[in-house]
Every structure is written in C-alpha cells, then in structure tokens.
Image (cartoon, rainbow, N blue to C red; front, side, top):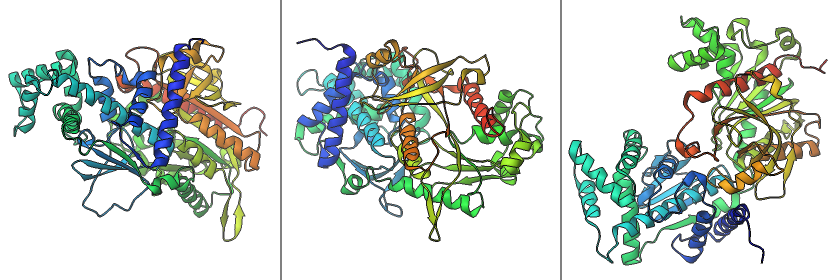
Length: 564
C-alpha cells in the first residue's frame, strides 16, 4: 500500500473530524472520554492544528493555545462537565448569568457551576469552532491529570500547593507568587518564564471577569478529570438540542437580518438606488468617510496623512457616529441573533467637509448615480453564505415584489497569508473550499495597481477553511507550493462566492456583477510565532485595513473605466 504524505494524512484527519462532528450533532450528544469522543480527539491531534502548537506533546501543556481558547470560550468553561449547544433560547430574565467571551461574539449562559449553554446562531462553522476548542481543552486537562498523578493515585506536592492557592482568600503576591508560578510550571511542563507570561496575560482579562485566571483554570481542568477518573460520575458530555438540529442550514437568523436591512432601506426611500454591499469591519469605512469632519468639528486638526488621521481618531474620544448621522449615515443594531450589525451610507448626503482629501470621491458622479453603501460586520464561516444568499434575494412588500438594484459586492476580510507577513494584502483570484471539490473563480475588480507601493500585495487563490482551528501546516504548505499556488487562507470568501453564483443563476443579480475581494494578513500560519495564537496584529494592521477600505470606497464613489 502506498504511504500517504503528511498533507494527505492531515486532510484525511480534517475530513474525519468534520464527519464525526456532524454525526454527533445528529445523534444529540457524545462524551469526549468515550470511544467516539476519543476518535474526535485523535483526529484533532493527528492533523495537529498550528493554532494549538504543542497539543500533540504529552509532556507539556500548550499555553499559547490555552490563551487563544480561553479568550474565545465563556468564563468558567474549564470546570464544566456538561456543555449544551442550542438554538436561540428565551433565557433572558432567568437567573442564568449571561456571558460573552473576550474575543468571540458568542452568547452563553452559566446554568450552574458545572453546566454552560452555548447559543449557536452562526451555523455549522460556529459548532466546529466550539468543538475544536472543547476537544483541545479536554486534551490538555488529561495532560495535567497525568502530570499530577505520576505515582498511581497519589497526587504531587505541586498539586497540593496549587489547591492551597485556590482555597486561599487572597491571591499570592511577591515571593509567594513566584513560588506558586514555579510550582505551576512543573505541573504544565513549561519554563517559569513561559508560565509567568501566560499567567500575566490571563490576569489582565481576569480583572474584567473574562476568565478565572491561570491558577484556577489549570486546577479546574485537572480536578475535573480526576473526579471523572475516581467516581466515573458526571463525565464531560456535550449535548446538541433538537432546536439546534432543526435550524442548521435553514437561514433563520440570516433571513431575519436580511429583512431588517431591506425594511430599513425601504423606510429610508433608498431601495430604488444602486446598492453596494460591503462585508467589512464597522469602523474603517465610517472613519474614512466621516472621520475628517468629526475631528475638525471637535477642535482637533486632522493630519494630512490619512493613516495618521486614523490614529488621531483612535486616540481621541471623538464621536464619529454622531457626526456621521447628520450626513447620511445610519446604524442598524442586530436583533436577529446573527451578531452582525449593519451600517447604511447614503452617499448623496456626504458633504465635501466630511472626508479626507486623500480619498478620491467624485461628487458629480455621486449626485448623478446616488450610490448607497450597505456595510455588514464580519460573518463567521458558513454564516457568510446564509447572509449573502438572503440579502441578494428580492423581498415582498405589500404584496409587491421589490427587486433591489445591487451595483457591487465587496468583501474586505482578514486572512492568514502564506507567502508574506502580517499586514500584507491579498487579492483573491479564486476561492478553493478545503475538504470539498468546490472551487470558485473570482473575476476580481481589484488589482495590485490599485494599492500604494509601500504595502506588498499578493494575488492568487485563497483557501476557504472549515475553521480557525482546523488548519494544518502540511496541508497549507501543499496549497502554497503546489500548482494551486494559494496565497492565503480564510473562512468566508468561498461561502460568499457560492451565494453570489446562486444569485446569478436565479437571476437576482447580473452575471457582470462587480465583485471585489481583498484581505489583510492577520497572521502567517507557516511561520512559528506568527500564527493567530501569537497575539493580535496591533498597529501593523491599520495601514493595510484602511488602504483596502479606501480603495473600495473609491471604486464605489467615482466613475470607473467602462462606465457611462
């Protein structure tokens, strides 16, 4: 039998993880410590996600991966033995505490000290995301348990010292803290310096009640496995409610979001104007179009450099929203459960004093064509298909079908880059759906010549992956170095393009629809220390983010070659 390559083995493991996860959703529950749960863990360990670093090393706990996961799961998840994933439940007004993780728009409820309920509104990608994080945590918990029980049932002295810290009324300080971190470093198999760094990182966010701190997290993970091993009662179990099973693939939340956007456009009398749909963050377009005027009005002299002006906005307390609302800007807060807020910009109401001179806007073109910009906050994985599919469909008002005039669709995303570094820019020529035979050619209106020369721009296919955690170095290296020549990986582009193609087939938009895909590099998963787990972009992402936004704005608000 021919030996499989590393990338082939990894792709098989990714496919196995997805197949098992889908089966668990249909069956309604599973136990990570059971045979089926172990297969899921084996699959995750086999393709060894870059974001989870040393997950496969039984000797050490992966601290950077732990930081990443704890930032994206609700406080207290480490001590729970029952996790429920459900559709949107009416839990408001109950005694259950509502919790939202630091770095993921995800609603959860603490049902009890040992039970948490996730409200899933963003489709299957969100479920895969939760399951990979929970599988990682359980894997690390078993490492901790093995480390503290090296002599049969007897626990280590370091574990007893950690228990004293957990039971103490005050946290250790000074020399006592140094000793506590040293003991903890022995438990997790890391150096004192590495353990201290993770302690301090989590401690910053513990103050804001986003997590319980490293001491309690490590203790709770180890203790949960210990309790499970000793009593065999209340093993960790993951449950999927019937309501969740029913909504998957049915666009319930996306449909509600789409209706709210279309209703607002109709209420504002904008539904007969050319609509330009944008998927992006909710600060860059607003700041570029209105930041200059907002700073001026607040008494701050805006910089002549566009990107320096953005720093001024970020460092001041100027209310750009309040200023923008006087010049055609409308904010729509999401109440659908999609966790996607929306902005509408009626460009006809923009005044010359609103925008920076560095942004090329054709006022006469705006007055003649009256373009409207609809900016949606980032979708999450497969949710992108549902949202775009619903938004491109006509709607019915008072028994009459309303067909919106969609002028363009622009996607500004963040992606992992393969040939470059953080802050670089990628332009998609195609989207390759990892793990499927589906590939989509992109007739991208954006080109490298649209961008300033001080930022490297790479054009080529981008791989749409199943999730942030479902990435493997060997698979990515294969996509980069083979004839695919992929320049990056992301999670939504292929799903957006699938919805666009469907809308063309259904006659909702023309085949000549202007489409723009540009991504700024948030990480390079092929380079150690540059993965998502290594930390946020910081200021290095501002120029590329705002450069993409500026280019898209100029494409929308001025006449292009070939237009009449």
